[in-house]
Image 1 (spheres, rainbow, N blue to C red):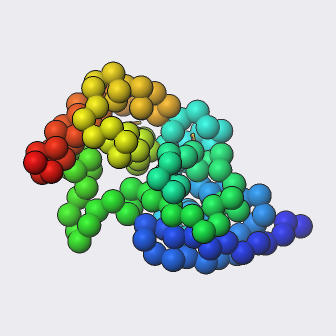
Image 2: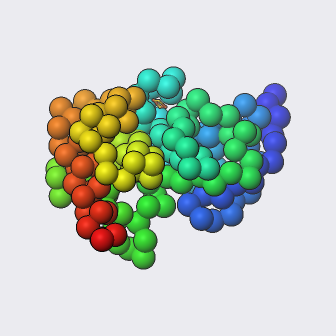
Length: 161
Ligand code: FES
Ligand code: FES
């Protein structure tokens, strides 16, 4: 019989508390306990990037992260990126640049891109390719995704100017 353990964390700015199975992944906790299905379970073994989220500002694979290790952490997912109904610049760039087809990889791609732009606001194309290297897309051929990230970076730098 699995043991339940308490966990408290901040998810997209909201305090959350739940009991989870000890040994549960952050992906399972987010989707099944905290009701945030934006991180996707693709491979569930750390190779596709679909489950990518930010934990205390760092990009993490939620399928390989024990939920218990995130007690007290600030977790951010794509569900928390829009503000007052307005899409985040990355979300807008993906939409306008047709960078999502089936959309399964999109939440992970957006979070990997956000982690990059938070550290490197004006990345080169090579920076973007490297930052997204852990995220698999079976639909787009990657070009529209890379272009969308570069476009969001440009939009950010114009709005900051
Ligand atoms: S579901 Fe986590 S890396 Fe694929
Ligand atoms: S849009 Fe389908 S896997 Fe990327």
